[in-house]
Image (cartoon, rainbow, N blue to C red):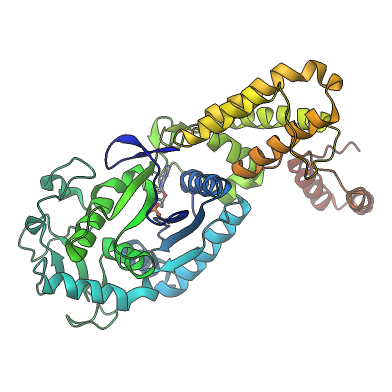
Length: 448
Ligand code: AMP
């Protein structure tokens, strides 16, 4: 299997540090607001990558950090009057609910920055002891000039660190030096005691303190969106390789492309976002997952309702075909000649840097080749096809089975309909119209 690493800008044979173990870290959310579907894109991609690695037999340990202390959280807390820790817990909970709805359940450990302050302090102290970091009156900073390899992930130079989000008007030796510890600025912000006075961690140090604690100084794969390559991931490499003296900190750096709207990155600051919650009011989570996987994880996706409709139709086509496979999959190992080339293409594509759009195309190749004479296929052939589609569905985190409407739902609909008739009879039109509108939104047509 080959995976593209941003570090070498090439696809490389996937070799792990410890046999079949994969230690994977992906930058998690800053929890000050609801996640939008751009976040959804990134986390669906990594969830699918984890699913595929596990399918291949790797034991994957997947950690995501939760940035629960940050300028954005403090600012939102001041605006809303909600204490920063309460605000962060609320949005962490909502984030995890959203992920669950998207069937993104693969994270083994959510590691909060605020639960790892001792590890953060320890790493900062070692950086100071080794001469890489220094204290000033407002914080502790990493001295970029001490690490000549800075820029090797992003191929960018130190000057470009100017746009760094930690860069305030400070007392640093060089404007490019980045904060490891920020001393208390005001009375109404959360702080932790440290050898350098009360304060809070810089943004980059939480990730390396967490990964060093759980994985050690070197591990297999690190992921995040493209925007994190610089300066965040560059700074992570700088801190960790400086403190451990070991390189590379991570061999496989995986970065997802943006989910865009009209060619622009979906983001909170551009006010062009749709939250996952809003999307799921109108769309099925599996349709969104399939939409995301229809583009390669490193490429940009342009979000539009038309594309979602397209994904809905594609998924529907697979499901209708799947329903024609009127057999039960059992433990038998069956081969089917017509399936073989498409199955090979599916797994070759997934082995080629998780090329999900090509893997999806192989499923349509299979459908086109077999659908017209499927009734002539033996049960063994159909079982082989169905088992393959079950594997594909599992890897994609969707189901190809058409959902049965349970008998209970008919009873429920009749009951709602009766209640609505009574409301209309009593001239309570507001309420009866509301029920009609909500049922329509759920896809039910009501004719009075
Ligand atoms: P944040 O909470 O903004 O730091 O983002 C959390 C993760 O979502 C990071 O890996 C970001 O790169 C990623 N992300 C944010 N916006 C988008 C987007 N529009 N498309 C894809 N990934 C995104």
